Image 1 (tube, rainbow, N blue to C red):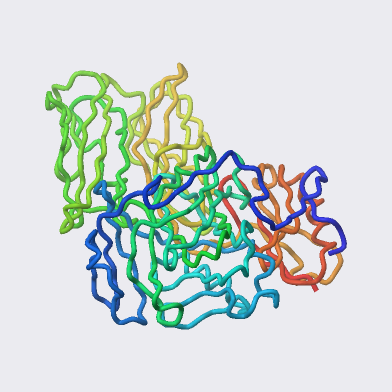
Image 2: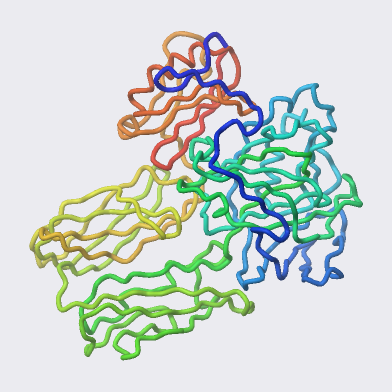
Length: 542
């Protein structure tokens, strides 16, 4: 490369790749008795058969066939919560600089597959093999670090997820033989360490699975430990995990979450005598799929003592004609049919008033390759100044205001509105709500609209010419992008950060393009990050 590595404001950004080279606020130790979450039961799927491991060590033997994947379907924690592995497929980057070189023997670091095969770090598909390891709960497949091939306290790799890691989830880590250590750091959306977060020092494992790999130390079984991402103590969203080698830990890290996800509901403000004002099941999930009366049962735990607001068995909520104005909260429980230990609690809050400034008819969200369209209809508006549209990507726990649409002031006719959101994550479940704002500042909200994106999204940014052989270089992106704060980065094919700029994209784009013109010929990855959205573009310079 012809010029020094760069960061915004002309600060030189030297990527050293040694140890825990970013300052952190402290350390948290996790072992089999400290800061880990106890396991009650693990359900495995092996060659189409289910195997249940319990706290009785006799149930934890190496499953047969011994060259088939051993997939963890669910883990029942000691507190009664059931968790399962998510379908998020992460990207592995920032590999240690020795990987892929002759500094490490071909069999010194690699991926041990369930069938006994071994993918060496010298293999061009090594990074993809690691991605397979950390995206699937097959615990007969894992990474293998031999001896001191990766020096102690140096970065092994980064695992970057396409969407935020909910801190309400769980991290499940395995290690062959349960006797080696590793550290973890939380990463932000740009793949950089979160300086306010704690470093997790993993020093022990609580559950011997008995699962071994016939081609890789068949006498050393996998050991597990479960802990919460809250252990990082991060005040910022977490999008990735940095794995720091200590003494050659051989294993994997997989993200799990509650198999039943219950979102507390806030029904649209209503008047008396209205039926089916909301349905609490619409926002709840079982194994990342919407729940239904075919998959769960609903029980009311704490009803309205007056009976004025009623939660029905189908999830609908009715308000009686006798209800007095006020705020009512009902607590309920949903339970998986056929698995009574898997349940979760939720609440629905209903505000009853004498008259409504807006009569909500519907609110919907529909995904497309370029974004999402939020549509809503109202049948009357009184003193209505505007509608505010808010988005949540963390299971409706918090919402971000993303836009406003002028209201109809005063009208008794049916009105239809739309708002387009181009900056939603490529994958995951997104919630929207529309809030009506009066001229006097009073508000009322619609019910939630949910959509799930799980398909390849056409990039909205691109670098051209591609391949680049000289002349003018350009990076095209929507005008909305250019006005937003974000980052532009360039990484080598092995994941090393070479150029990194942060600021208003339209302002930093020229100096970023100059940096691209100065790098040597090769295959690169251009990263564009803005407002929770990340795009990865392959670019070739010849």
